[in-house]
Image (tube, rainbow, N blue to C red):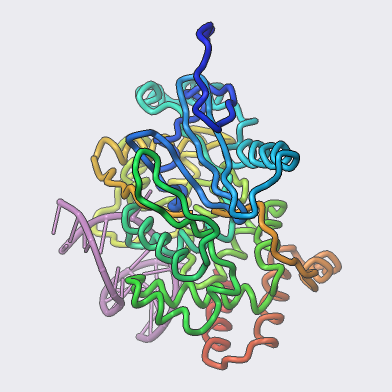
Length: 401
DNA sequence: GGCATACCTTCT
DNA sequence: GAAGGTATGC
């Protein structure tokens, strides 16, 4: 550890948080396909994200993270400001999971895995974000058959279309004005007209998935939808995964992305063709030529293998490998125009019902019953017959797995 | 339960 | 024709 004796120059209006770039590399983490909503201003290495009531701005040097938040009118008074700054700091610590010592993890992975040891120097500071599950869910429904650049544009358009801006800011080092939109609510995306709107925005077949998922969520949990998703953090990996798989457009891979990136399931490894290739190339998983889609069996095999190698934080290690792979194959074309995020939200929340009580009172295994009660709630309260039957089918199908 | 195919769009 | 998959039907 180097001791820095030089005084740091803090950018005007920013606060400084001592933090090694080895613990967190903003350029690596914010553009590697975890979040798609950060505005990245490469020239000045400033990064901006729109939360529900503020825009968080970040810069960084080797040993400091600089942060500030900008607010819509009316501006906070002098007295309110320190509270607001503190909220931003609390959010930062949570979002970047700063209590997790990444250097220690890198050391542990290096001891266990020579492959990791080889790449660690060149890919430092890559950690898992702790994202908002709702935003994460919708973003990753967009990710099927897709690339980072396009997903970023889609998510940006989604926010622009379905969520009013809270603030307009001039870009750093420029006179261009950018509007900052928070991530839209489940209620906003559940409206029936959303499908055609998303189609026209170039979402393709994912348009229907998004509207249906949002509608399903709101139909069951109403204003408590986001909180319900958030509470999956307390559930077991298996239970949370089964819940996620009920949503339209969510298969195993997307579900695992959400588990890892917003539901605290740090051991989960989302397995796509890319990860498959890495597993074959370096970790002794046998290749299966001529197979277009990955079978559940192969998926499980890769997962088991990699968790054996990396341990508890396997999902985190995977993201380092994955990012290194992205770069080395130069498919790292990332748009410089993503858009806004969540948390610090001020929406009314309503009690969510049944679920908990039914689950706990039942003699059946947790997962099974949660599944069942979910189905019943949904089907009985649904109004559109077509959607009703298709979802019932889907849930039935899922139950068989 | 395993397997094949369509699906929006962009990139190679 | 593949790409950072999923739904559907057989």
